[in-house]
Length: 124
Image (cartoon, rainbow, N blue to C red; front, side, top):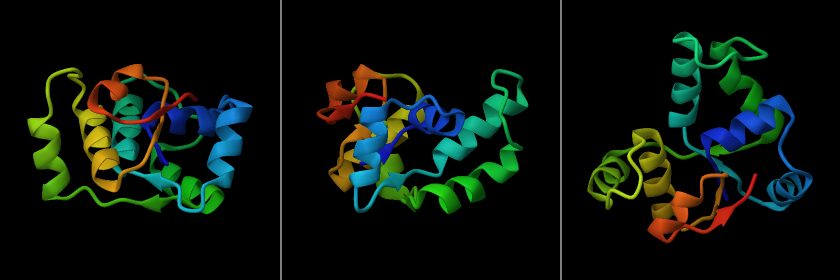
Protein backbone atom coordinates (compact mmCIF):
# COMPACT_ATOMS: atom_id res chain seq x y z
CA UNK A 1 0.00 0.00 0.00
CA UNK A 2 1.13 3.55 -0.80
CA UNK A 3 0.23 6.31 1.63
CA UNK A 4 -0.67 9.59 -0.05
CA UNK A 5 0.02 13.05 1.33
CA UNK A 6 -3.31 13.46 3.13
CA UNK A 7 -2.92 9.99 4.64
CA UNK A 8 0.58 10.89 5.79
CA UNK A 9 -0.70 14.09 7.36
CA UNK A 10 -3.44 12.19 9.15
CA UNK A 11 -0.83 9.72 10.40
CA UNK A 12 1.45 12.54 11.63
CA UNK A 13 -1.44 14.42 13.28
CA UNK A 14 -2.87 11.24 14.83
CA UNK A 15 -6.19 11.38 12.97
CA UNK A 16 -5.80 8.27 10.80
CA UNK A 17 -8.76 5.93 11.28
CA UNK A 18 -8.28 2.76 13.31
CA UNK A 19 -9.15 0.69 10.23
CA UNK A 20 -6.52 2.48 8.13
CA UNK A 21 -3.91 2.09 10.91
CA UNK A 22 -4.62 -1.64 11.14
CA UNK A 23 -4.25 -2.05 7.37
CA UNK A 24 -1.04 -0.04 7.35
CA UNK A 25 0.35 -2.03 10.28
CA UNK A 26 -0.46 -5.32 8.56
CA UNK A 27 1.20 -4.31 5.28
CA UNK A 28 4.62 -6.01 5.05
CA UNK A 29 5.96 -3.33 2.67
CA UNK A 30 4.18 0.03 3.09
CA UNK A 31 5.31 2.59 0.54
CA UNK A 32 5.75 6.33 0.57
CA UNK A 33 6.58 8.63 -2.31
CA UNK A 34 9.06 11.43 -1.43
CA UNK A 35 6.89 13.93 -3.32
CA UNK A 36 4.65 13.89 -0.23
CA UNK A 37 7.44 15.40 1.89
CA UNK A 38 7.88 18.12 -0.71
CA UNK A 39 4.15 18.87 -0.88
CA UNK A 40 3.88 19.08 2.90
CA UNK A 41 7.00 21.23 3.22
CA UNK A 42 5.86 23.55 0.44
CA UNK A 43 2.39 24.01 1.93
CA UNK A 44 4.00 24.68 5.30
CA UNK A 45 6.37 27.25 3.77
CA UNK A 46 3.55 29.21 2.10
CA UNK A 47 1.42 29.17 5.24
CA UNK A 48 -1.27 26.72 4.08
CA UNK A 49 -0.30 24.07 6.63
CA UNK A 50 0.97 24.18 10.18
CA UNK A 51 3.02 21.17 11.29
CA UNK A 52 3.60 19.76 14.78
CA UNK A 53 7.30 19.33 13.89
CA UNK A 54 9.72 21.18 11.62
CA UNK A 55 9.12 20.32 7.95
CA UNK A 56 12.78 19.37 7.51
CA UNK A 57 12.45 16.82 10.35
CA UNK A 58 9.32 15.19 8.94
CA UNK A 59 11.00 12.61 6.68
CA UNK A 60 13.32 11.29 9.38
CA UNK A 61 10.55 11.01 11.92
CA UNK A 62 8.21 9.27 9.49
CA UNK A 63 10.79 6.73 8.33
CA UNK A 64 11.97 6.08 11.88
CA UNK A 65 8.48 5.63 13.30
CA UNK A 66 6.58 3.91 10.51
CA UNK A 67 9.11 1.92 8.45
CA UNK A 68 7.90 3.02 5.02
CA UNK A 69 9.92 2.10 1.96
CA UNK A 70 10.49 5.14 -0.21
CA UNK A 71 9.68 4.72 -3.89
CA UNK A 72 11.99 6.82 -6.04
CA UNK A 73 10.33 9.28 -8.38
CA UNK A 74 11.98 8.53 -11.71
CA UNK A 75 11.42 9.28 -15.37
CA UNK A 76 9.03 6.37 -15.78
CA UNK A 77 6.76 7.71 -13.05
CA UNK A 78 6.90 11.35 -14.18
CA UNK A 79 6.24 10.38 -17.81
CA UNK A 80 3.26 8.27 -16.74
CA UNK A 81 1.95 11.09 -14.53
CA UNK A 82 2.18 13.55 -17.42
CA UNK A 83 0.19 11.31 -19.77
CA UNK A 84 -2.59 10.22 -17.41
CA UNK A 85 -6.11 11.32 -18.38
CA UNK A 86 -7.09 14.62 -16.79
CA UNK A 87 -9.42 13.25 -14.11
CA UNK A 88 -7.20 14.92 -11.54
CA UNK A 89 -5.23 18.15 -11.97
CA UNK A 90 -3.11 18.11 -8.81
CA UNK A 91 0.46 17.39 -10.00
CA UNK A 92 1.47 15.84 -6.68
CA UNK A 93 -1.46 13.44 -6.74
CA UNK A 94 -0.79 12.55 -10.37
CA UNK A 95 2.73 11.45 -9.37
CA UNK A 96 1.29 9.40 -6.52
CA UNK A 97 -1.24 7.80 -8.89
CA UNK A 98 1.49 6.94 -11.40
CA UNK A 99 3.57 5.47 -8.58
CA UNK A 100 0.67 3.31 -7.38
CA UNK A 101 -0.01 2.11 -10.91
CA UNK A 102 3.61 1.15 -11.50
CA UNK A 103 3.97 -0.54 -8.11
CA UNK A 104 0.52 -2.17 -8.49
CA UNK A 105 -0.57 -1.16 -4.99
CA UNK A 106 -3.58 0.42 -3.31
CA UNK A 107 -3.41 4.00 -2.06
CA UNK A 108 -4.33 5.06 1.45
CA UNK A 109 -6.21 8.29 0.70
CA UNK A 110 -9.50 10.08 1.13
CA UNK A 111 -9.34 11.27 -2.47
CA UNK A 112 -11.84 9.09 -4.35
CA UNK A 113 -10.65 10.49 -7.72
CA UNK A 114 -7.67 8.12 -7.55
CA UNK A 115 -10.13 5.33 -8.38
CA UNK A 116 -10.82 7.00 -11.76
CA UNK A 117 -7.36 5.74 -12.77
CA UNK A 118 -8.00 2.15 -11.71
CA UNK A 119 -6.22 2.58 -8.40
CA UNK A 120 -7.66 0.74 -5.40
CA UNK A 121 -8.48 3.40 -2.77
CA UNK A 122 -8.26 2.62 0.94
CA UNK A 123 -9.97 5.35 2.99
CA UNK A 124 -7.97 7.16 5.66
